Length: 574
Image (tube, rainbow, N blue to C red; front, side):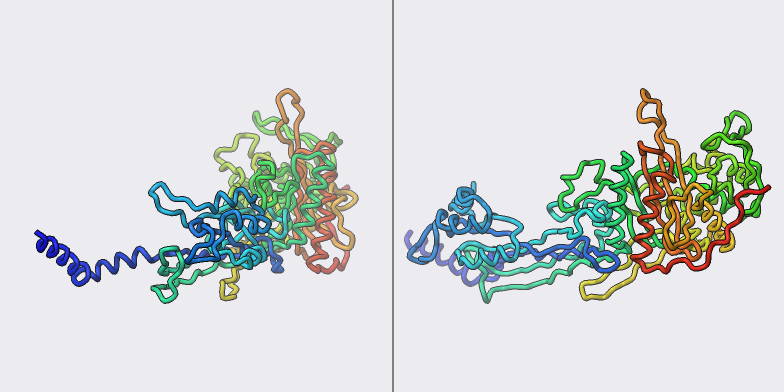
């Protein structure tokens, strides 16, 4: 019996040590191998000048192996007790001593194995970790990490967006450009010993991480900051629900997309929910009289009128059928106005007298050609606006669209209509990404959006001269004047629904949109004031903000003042 038992054990020993060595070695190696993810660094977002709006900075998470905090032993006399280690670590980690003692106390899992890993603190700066490392406490380790920071604070916060605590993109450009900003994580494979230590000459391999690309915007952080301040101040002064300011070049580069309510991307939860949105892209409104530019451009392009076309304009016009009537903003005797004068006086009646010569299909086609009903930047939450096809228009809508009602736009859409005229009748869709920089430093410009001619250069010049008449002593936009520069623009006042059925009082969307210098347009600024309480006229509440922002932006961009004085078409006739 004894010989039989010895024979069984001998056979098993031969199997383990001679026959199955390869398989068992592989199993042992698999138990010793550990794979660690090396996270890629998220790319930086900058403005057009390289000023940082969002970046990831190096951070460390302090971890520990509680099984090593037993106090001195014969094998390792430098081991500390949980109480000794906690007393040294607490001031550096900012964690209460009692909490650290609990984390460092040796314990076992439900399966009876010793716990060999736990977090002590997260998000340590490099300086903090160096101080912890200098303590040379056995069993305390570092885990590389990163933190997303926003050095510009609330400047462009609604546009830049933010990421979650785990680095997941949640809003704005952070989400829209996530594919470019996010890199590819690397991996580190190595052998570790029984206590988790890396075996120096053991099996190892490394796949380096590929960092994300940096994204450069067309945005100018200084112009954005100034525009946000102007919007915030005017919202307070007029008791408006919100104010939006858009600044862009004639070829579609967005320099500022500002609003009165701003979010701090570093702490989005601290901002009330309604202000976390980008109203310049997400909220819609009827453009009102600023939309008359499209009617003027279409009528001139189709040969139906010129700036000098003479009209006799009453203060009210009865529409065909049951469409009701349209009136001007104030009662007046019949006026002898040119088409340029109609635009300067912002006459609804005069605009219809000319615009009704366009077919409903032509009216719709020109609205679409100017970008109405289309998303511009493709950012999260951006609206297309509201534009029904002409077959769905009722008897009144076909006339309302001629003076900026019956359809809805966002602030950027409203601005890019004027940018098309400023660009000589060629529409370049708005864009905000200038290009990307790869981890090796190679800069790749973004693909330019396709340009489309909407009206002729001659028509654009005539419309511009008509818009200049608005910013004169006889026009509604006198407050939009910028010293030293010729300005062309248009006021807008669109009636909105009452705040409540009980009040019955209408609310208004007030605006001014224009370009400068009118003799060689370079910049377009749109100011939208939603539901102001002090006055509802765009020339009163929006035009002064336009003047301030446009003046600053022209100086910041180094645009030279206007040269020759304007040669404007007559506004009246005898």
